[in-house]
Image (cartoon, rainbow, N blue to C red):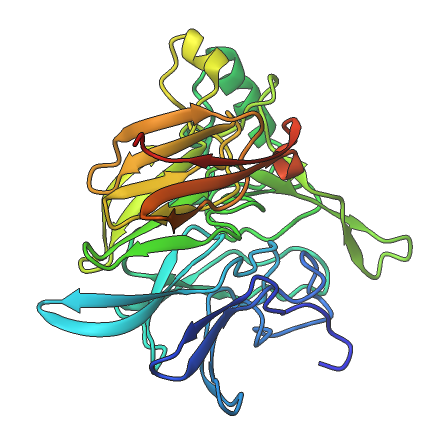
Length: 372
């Protein structure tokens, strides 16, 4: 701990005032992709932490990824929720992750509400690396992102793109989730952008639905031996795409999911975002990578921007149907907010564009309201 960086709560905190608990989701330990100098599970990296607000004392922890080698930091704090299981209410927190899972944990004890199981995962072939032999998986809810990458998962937007991706796969380690980085390159899916990301999730206490936007875009993790061959270095964030630059995996490439936390099942899941040029080719909406989260209103709307098509949308919270959309001047890679002025409700999005999705930049705050 004296020399180890990261494992920080870079994404903020959630406060349970009633029970006097502070919750945090922690990041991975440095360095992100090479852990030969940090053997073990690496507590308290990749954890949900519950601390006593008054004293700072640790009440409990729950680790979502052991010995992280994929930059699978918990990108957001957990959300306070109340789960109604067979008529009995239980206070919990819901932690969405870059791995594509939602862990629903008892607020006071950290016990997984729907259970978990240990599963064996691949070993590392990098000299000195000791990847965790198992990882932990929730029994419910199901993963809200594509998990792993097989030959059958190769893109199908054209025969040429599919063949190119399948040919590339022959040179890479691929298959299940949690394949460690390798010399030849390992496919990481969900990728470095998730799954879920820093925008987290929103929760509707009336329905018990948790709303999370996510990415289904794969990346390649490759390690290169240092000059003395005693350590290895990560070669960079290499996006796995087809020859035209679209994600190498079958669509959808971005989703919006409503999870019914009372059952642990999806209420609905829809693609989030479009590529207009692919729509013109007769390809169904594919979704896009997205950064920026949801808000849900008591009136039954889920607002989200975040997509590469630079649109702001409102979805029906019960069905996932798009009720409204607006073309922004630049991408709204932020979480919207809603507020009241003189009894009138507004919703506003920061349309700054640019960033990780590399669309054009902007400098607008766009506010919307229903007509008088």
